[in-house]
Image (tube, rainbow, N blue to C red):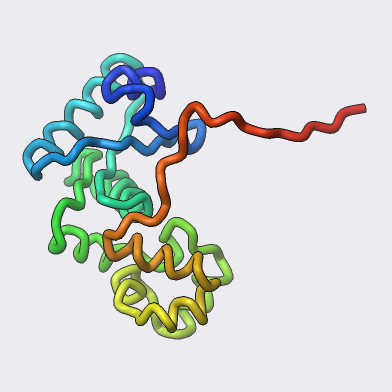
Length: 169
């Protein structure tokens, strides 16, 4: 799957996030082009690999994860969700529980629920000062900005050398 993505968009535009997930950096495209690109990516990966995939497209990594989750969850989406305008993004945030936001752990999800903040949309409307105080400082503020469509979590260099420590007997 990752090789297919690299072939379609270029090696430097693919950040492999996990064994079955990647972020792609796409050029600026209008709405119709984004939908066509998503369809092409989905059809090509599924055709070349035989593996079903879902595609979430949005201006930030957090919103991409929201879009991808909804693409999987909503049968009507046919495995593709594009958050390319404020209306689509707001609707997606309304459908996303705070516990399902990338970066919100179990404890924070529980805390947010107790405070009545049950959707990503409600969280996205909170003041930055409140988020800084209640969601881990700068990390919480980055998350808030990402939910509002402002990229704060950058693509990692695919050629970056990983440092690992291993211990064996």
